[in-house]
Every structure is written in structure tokens, then in C-alpha cells.
Amino acid sequence: MKLDQNIKVAVDAIVFGYSGNKLSVLLIKQKFGVMKQQWALVGGFVKDDESLSAAVKRELQEEAGIEVNFLEQLYTFGDNIRRDPRFRVISVAYFALVNPAQFQVKADTDAEDAQWFPIDELPDLAYDHREIVETAIQRLKNKVTYQPIGFGLLPDEFLFSELENLYCTILNREIDRRNFRKKILSFGFVEETDRFASKKSGRPAKLFRFNALKYNELIANGIHFEINFA
Image (cartoon, rainbow, N blue to C red; front, side, top):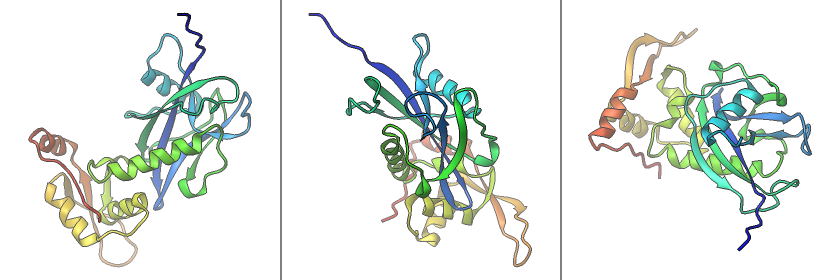
């Protein structure tokens, strides 16, 4: 039986950043094609000789001028066969969590512009990228309850209140801060340092840090991180 197939494979990257108690996503303005001048996720077609992970890393460099150490595959989007007006395209989406202060984003060869946008202030997005972003946000909300991925959004040393605010922002609601602090510290992978945050007034607050080695040891020993926010 002759197989009539002409499907292209693409990758898209949802890069989340956190600053000023706001969760943001990195977008680029399309430089070429049918969606020229429209905002979109970083992404593009996979070359015949590269892996999916290599393709998404290349697109991040070509369109936003950044390198991301960790990317997690989110979902494959292709049920809508007309998601791209040009031809049939299946997109494999990846998401990453970064501290924007550690990156200098800039539009590179394949993009007109690159900017961070708060997730509640997103412009109209090309293709089905709004759906992709919403899927990534839901995955993030679910995942912070059983894996401490939020530390990728914070500085190496942070106030505990900043960690609390991060969870409130991701979950889009207030949490029981006293129980949250007790639960997080009970695991032992969030450590109090001997340094204080600089404050113009009031009592200086201690800084904390995430000990990835300690967390990995706990996981290896069968101790699972889980927080119930109900």
C-alpha cells in the first residue's frame, strides 16, 4: 500500500522565567514567513540530521541567543491538522525554568525581537502557541507539588519568603505559609545559610539555598518530595 505522507516535524520551547513575583515566558517576534511580525514561542523545524533535543537547543540560540541547560519534553501537538496554515506540522514542545537575571536575551538570526512577557499579559500568539503555553502552565502547577523544580527560577541564594511567593505565583493562589515552611524544611534539601539579605529597615532576614545533592540522595533512598496544597 502506497503511503501518501508529507508531514514536517518542529520543536517549540516554553521558557519560563520568574522576577518581581511574576511568572513570565520568553517570546520572539517572527522575522519571516506567513506569521511575520507576530509573537510566538521559540521554535522551528527539525533538520534531517539532528535529534529533537539538539533542534530545540539550536532554535533557542538562533532566535533568542541563549543556552538552556535543562529542557523537559512537554507534549506533542498535532491533533489539529491545520495548526500551521502552510502544511501539516507536528510540534514536539519542551519547557524550561530559568532565572531571567542570568540571561541576556536578544533576537538573533531568525527573529525580529525577543522579550519576556508575564503569563497574564501575553500578546496574541501565532499558530496554536497559546494552547501550548497553557498546557505548560498546567504541567508546571502540577509538577511543583511533587518535584522541587521551582528552584530553577530563583537565585542561588534566596529569602524563604521568595520561595513562598514563587509557589503562590505558580499556583495562582495563597498557600498556608507556616505549614509550607515546616514541610519544605523537614526534607533537609533547603538549607539556611549564614548570610543575610540586605534590608534598608527592619530585621535582616537569612538567606537559603537549594542543595541538589541532598535532594538526589533522598530520591535515591526512596524518599519522595510531595506537598499537598489542598
